[in-house]
Length: 276
Ligand code: SAM
Image (cartoon, rainbow, N blue to C red; front, side, top):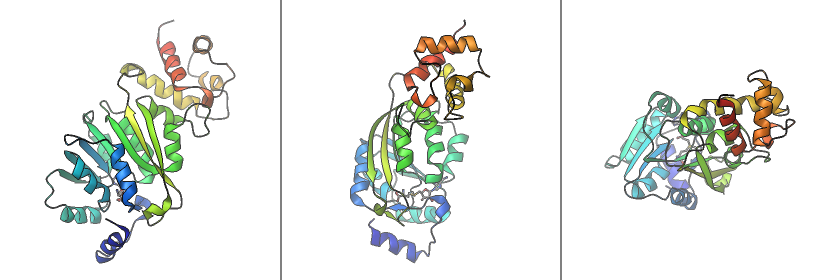
C-alpha cells in the first residue's frame, strides 16, 4: 500500500488518526521489504505482528510466512483489515491491547518471530514483556523510535545504555539496526525511527531462577544514574557480599552502573545468589 492508497483508504473511511495510539503508518515499500528481509522468514514461520494498522507490513508477512497473528487496538482499523484480508486463511486478527494480551496470555512463543512497526508509547514494555516471557520468540524485528532502538543495542559506556538494554540483551543478541527516516511514515512523526533485529540467545546467560535477582540488581543500579552503583545496592545486600562480589567481577567500587557490562551484571547476579 503506497502513500496515495493510504490517504485514500483513510479518507474514504473518514478515519481520524489517533496520535496516542502512535498511528504513523509506514508507506515506503523499500523499508517494508527491508523489515521483512530482517525477519528471514520461511513458509513454516509463525509471526506475531503488533499494530498492523492498515496492513502494509501484514501483506508482505502473509506472502512469506506460514501464519500471522496480528493484534490491533483500534476497532476501525480491525474492521478495515477484516474486509481487506477477508480471503486470507493464514491471518488471525485480534482486536485487543497487545500489552494487556501479552500479560494475560502466557503462551509458548519460542516458535514465533515478532515483526512489527510498534506503537511508540508501548514499544519498550512490549519488548520487555516478550523478552521476559517463559518461552520468548526466536527473533524480534521491531521498528520504533531511533532513540529507543539505540537503547536496545547499546553496550556499557554508550549514552543510551541502561535498563532496557540489559533487560532485553539478557535474552537477545542485537544483530542489526537500520535507520528509517521520518518521511517514510504518514503522517510524518517528529523523530526518526529504526528497525532493530534481535536474535534469541541459544544458550541462556543465566538460569531461569536467577533472573529475578538480575532484574532487581539492574533496576536498583540504574535507579539514580549519576550515583555510584555500590551506594545504590548497599541497602539491599550485605556490604561485605557486595564488596566481595565487585572484586570477584573485577569492577571498581566507585563505578556507576552505566559502565558495567551485561556480562559483569550476569556474573554479579550469580555471585550474590550463591551461599557465602
Ligand atoms: N503496522 C502499521 C504500519 O507499519 O503502517 C501501523 C504501525 S503504527 C506505528 C502502530 C499501530 O499500533 C497502529 O495501528 C495503532 O492503532 C496500533 N496500536 C497502538 N497501541 C496498540 C496496542 N496497545 N495494542 C495493539 N495495537 C496498538
